[in-house]
Structures are given as structure tokens and as C-alpha cells.
Image (cartoon, rainbow, N blue to C red; front, side):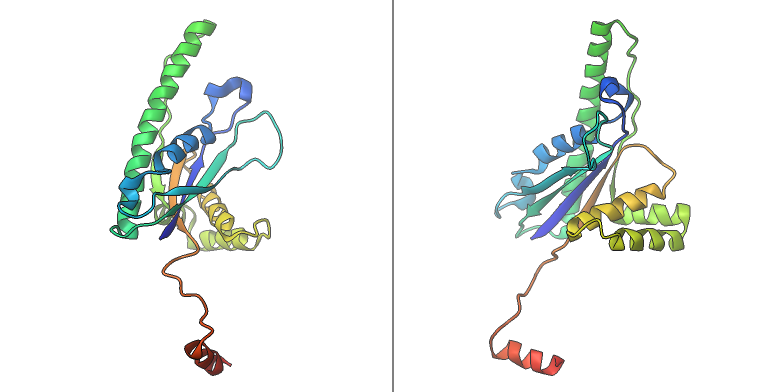
Amino acid sequence: KVLAGVYVRGYQTHAGEYFRGFHAMGLLSRLVTEIDGSNDISGKAPSPVTLKIKDAKDEYNVMTSPAGWAYFNIFTTEKTPAEILQVLRAKSDRVIGEYLADLNESFRAYGAAAGVPAGGLLWDVATRTYSEIHRMAAENAGTARVKSALDAARSSGRHTDVRETGFAMIAALLDLMDNRDPVVVLVFLPPFYPYISPDRGAFGSAVRGIVR
């Protein structure tokens, strides 16, 4: 079992100027639809299920959300975590391409209806892994700044859930990169398995006695 996270950074804009930005939740909703219930990831095991979806807005306003994230419970009896990541990346790349095509079609339809120029949207959206953005941030800002940013994200006190802390760490790394294009980041989040619960029998008692 793994807990797979998907973080989408968009480009914020006013709700009345939709095509001037890139709505993170629009792409994220497509990714959720693609992953949730998809047994090409899980095989014979129960299908992936979305456990939580959230955007980055803390209060009401009329701006699009600058970012959003979701995480999925994924069981598997056949794939390694690396193989699951490959499947998720392929899904993300395909969904990005389809979403950009639909977005351009909507933009042209809007332009025709409103009588405004609508030649096409030129967003460059990539799929990255956590390790990739960590390396890219270190190359751009240096390992000391990366460590400081991650320590700050972990100790800020804003997130009581370790999964939300994980997404805050992704946001901190992206802030250290020069590239401000929309991006999808894939990550594995805790709890990490296999997990062994505390044993209350003789073995557990013996271990606790040694620890004490």
C-alpha cells in the first residue's frame, strides 16, 4: 500500500479573466478522475481511492486557486513504488495534454462568442517528482537554502497533518525555482508501509523492556 500525492501549481488570476491564468483545480480535478478507481494501477488489489482534495486558498476571494492537491490510497500486489510512480506520471502527462487541448478549444470558443482575439494558450506544463524538484531547487538556490526552506515548512505550525506538511514542503521547493510555469508534482506521503503495529504480547514486552 502507498499513499500517493498529486500537487498542482497553477497561475492565479481573477475569476473574470479565466484565460489569463491557469486554474490549478481544473487540472487537478481531471487528474483525480483519471486516478480514482483506476485498476491499471492496483491490478488484483482494491482500486485507488481519493482520500482528500484541497486547494491552497484559506479564505473567500474571487481569484482562482494558485495551487491544489489530492492524495490517494493505492493498494497493489504486483507493482513496486517506482512502477506506480511511472504509471502515475504517464497518466499525468496524458491528462495534461488533453486538458491543454480542451482549454485551447474553450478559449477559441470564448473568443468567437465574445468577439475578442483568441489565438491560443501557450502554457508549458510538466510532470515532476518530489526528488526532481528537490534537485532542481538545490541547483538553483543551493542546498543551504533548500534545507532552511524545508525546515521552515516542517516547523511552521500551520499544518497538524503530516500529509499537508508534505505538500507545504513541495510549495517551498517550487518557490526556490526560477521556473514559474504550472507544474504537477508527484510524491509519496506518510504513513509508509509495511507498517507493524505495536505488539502487546511477549515479544513486544521484551522489546519495551530493553528500550527502557
